[in-house]
Structure formats: C-alpha cells, structure tokens
Amino acid sequence: MNARPGCLWVVATPIGNLGDFSPRAKEVLARVALIAAEDTRHSAPLLAQIGPHAPLLALHEHNEREQAQRIVARLLAGEDVALISDAGTPLISDPGFRLVRAAREAGCEVSPVPGPCAAIAALSVAGLPSDRFVFEGFLPAKAAARRERLRVLAGETRTLIFYESSHRIVETLADMNTVLGARREAVLARELTKRFETVLGAPLEALHARVLVDADQQRGEFVLVVNGADGEDDAATLAAGRRIFALLREELPPSRAARLAAAISGAPRKQLYVEESQSAE
Ligand code: SAM
Image 1 (tube, rainbow, N blue to C red):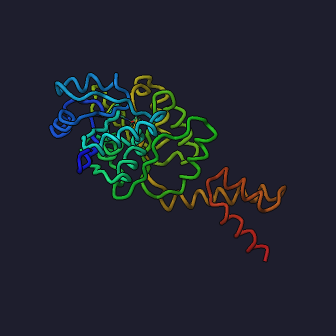
Image 2 (spheres, protein in one colour):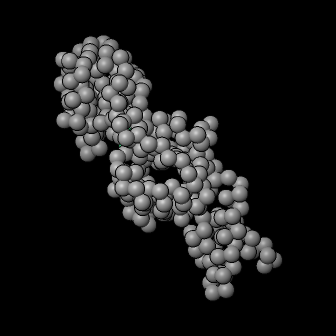
Image 3 (tube, protein in one colour):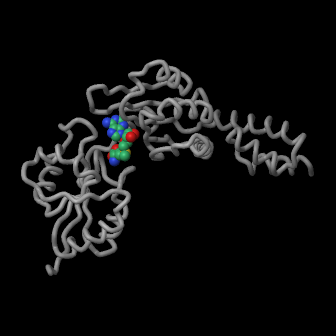
C-alpha cells in the first residue's frame, strides 16, 4: 500500500451550457483512477468530451454509505478519485456529504474543483441583496409540510434561495404568495445557461399570476430567489397575528390561541403569548 493517500476531487460540472465545463475539471477527470458519479448513464455524454477516462462508480443517496467505504479504501491505497453529480456542484442538493466526511475522517485530502452551481448563478443575476443569504434547497413535496416550512422562514431577513421542479413550481409560488406575502419581491430563474433561460422578477403575487397563465414558464428547472423579510413585513405579520389572536382568545385558552394565531399568521407565538400575559397583569 502507498504511504500517501490519494485525493478526493469534488468536481463541479455544467448546469446546462457545456461551455461551462472548465479546463481544470476536464483535466482532473481525465487523470483520476475512479470517477464517482450520481448517475453513470447521465454522466457518460459529458465525460465523452474528455476522451478516455477512468471507470465510473455509481454513488447516489441510496448507496452512499457503502460506496463511501469502497472509495475511501481506494483513496487509502493511494488512488485519486473524482466526485461529480448529474449537474453543478456535488453536495449542493446532491449526494456526496457522507463520502466527503468519510474521506476527511480517514485523513485523505479533499479538494474542490469549483464551478457552476444553480443557486449561486441565480443569486448573481437576481438583483436581490446578496451580502447574506440562506440556501433552503427543495421545499417539502407535501403541501402541509411545505407551508409549515415557509411559515418558519417568514421572518427570515436574509435573501432566501430555493430549488424547485416543474411539477411543483405553480403550487410553490401560490404558497409563497400566501405565506410570505403578496408584496414580497422574488426572482424566478429558469433554465439557467440553457436555450430557454428566463429570469423573471416581480412581487410574489404577480410572479405567481404570470407563471400560472404561461405554460412555457412552468417547464424546465428553477431557482427561486426571494427577498428576506423587512421591517415592514414583520410589522404587518405581527399585526395580523395580534388580530387573529384576539379573535381566538374569545373562545380558547391563551396558549392554544397563541399557537394557532402564530401558525396562521407567521407571527412569533411567544410574543403573542407574552403580550397577553402582560396585558392581564
Ligand atoms: N448540485 C446542483 C447545483 O449545484 O446547482 C443542484 C442539483 S439539484 C438535484 C437540481 C435542482 O437545481 C433543479 O431541480 C433546479 O431547482 C436547480 N437547477 C439545476 N440546474 C438548473 C438550471 N440550469 N437552471 C435553473 N435551476 C437549475
């Protein structure tokens, strides 16, 4: 066995336009001993661009634990391995986290070959504050869980970034409009770097209405960038929470009324509850 372990290269690949396949990504993929890919059939055409290359090993969310052990053994034997996903940067809403952790724990070098990432590409053209942002990835598929997650995020002041698929884009925009508020600014970045790339910016109500009536805008891959809550939004949410709380309080004990009012409005439950107990003193 070699004294020196190999390196795990985490390689970003294009999110659409093959012109974004970097020379360094190609060079690394051409010289490693093994390429771990999310879907080997999907990656074959991309890798055909670099000519002869190492064999592919499938690494996806259902086999990552076992495959990570195999790959670490290869690294410890001194071989270099590359990790790619179907598109963009591995680990970003893609498999790889367990492998990277296992490689680092085994004392192997892990090195990035940075490149395309849909979230960052969308943020870079959205024209929304980009100094602080939160990457939320995919919202839950089920409506109740999705709305609950949005309620949790309603007061977040940093710019929010979501991934979404064509199956749910209309529903997600409808829920965002209801939970985050009709006036909240958002940008829908569709098919970035591809032929039908569109970047639409509008308040959530208008954005939802626009996408609802245009089947073309419901096709492809999407990133949604949403402005963070501002002070005005927070004040409006709290005012709504207080109104709902006052109504529910006529029928319910304070803790239950506060919980429901917070769930409906997105206002902080504790604040509604504390205000009540202070006013009762
Ligand atoms: N690892 C990838 C990255 O770095 O962006 C993301 C993988 S995630 C499984 C796939 C999601 O990313 C898509 O459903 C879509 O939300 C977003 N996405 C990927 N490519 C995109 C593109 N060209 N335009 C807009 N969104 C894209």
